[in-house]
Length: 50
Image 1 (cartoon, rainbow, N blue to C red):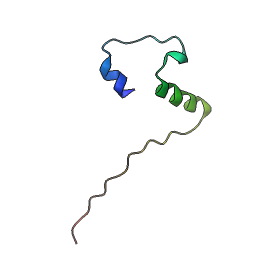
Image 2: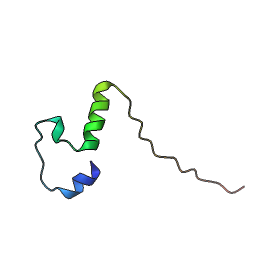
Image 3: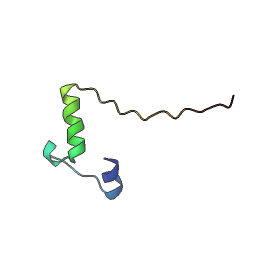
Image 4: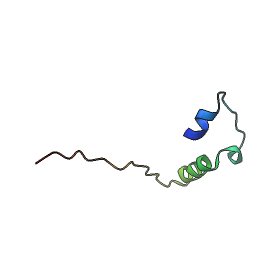
């Protein structure tokens, strides 16, 4: 939804799930089904010199 948030300047009123962007609808269905969504970024380790 980040991509869409930068393209629009006014709020949109949605009346059904079918009007959501495909990715947002997928996350909504997963949330309603109780499936955990693990979107973690890979940690960048700071390497200290020996």
